[in-house]
Length: 283
Image (cartoon, rainbow, N blue to C red):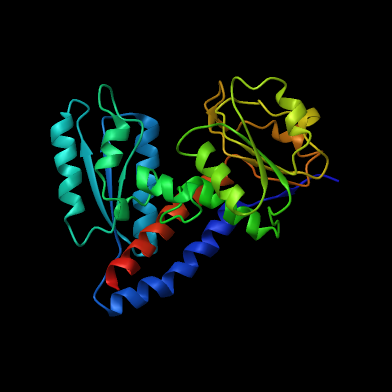
């Protein structure tokens, strides 16, 4: 039997609808959630991501503050802009689109964001709180993956989860959230020998390596849940994940597609975090 599809687009729509009464309640108190997004330079992929985020804000009732800065902006000026947003009470969340043009230091810029406005969950304070099992803001993509598991009735407790990738944005926080949910977690990466041997033990696979077609059917345990975080371009310019969807879907129990899987959830959890930040500021 082919795997059941985890429809991230449909789940994202439901979660955004659930934000409506929370935003309405804030407005009765004179508060409109506000998200500031900074785009530096003219990277086409980053421009698309930012445009989608700004549109999602507008569609949901969140006020967006968008700044498009030149690639040659100095670090001091960029940090000053971030700090100015930290002081703006109308701004509840701040996101600086990554990657930044060289020689700008992305982590230094993230650390300049007030941790209680870091709705991307990348500030060292938020990363540390996630590590301790007391997250203030969860990193958006891993948070979305956890919601996807919840939506299909999969409780990670007692299950073996394998995360492919060790980035600060996805791999590491993903592993921490799964650990907090009482899964046994293995983190794999480019130096892991015999990836297939580990994947065949996994009840849950989260692929976030950025390598098209890395995960194939023979690597997957029958009935496993496979969530594909990868975003890779095919020679035809189409979007493809890290998982061989056609092959793996014949073995897995559940699988997320690319596109239409994790992508919509990442943006949605950014909106959720922004509304939560506004609610905290309003208390």
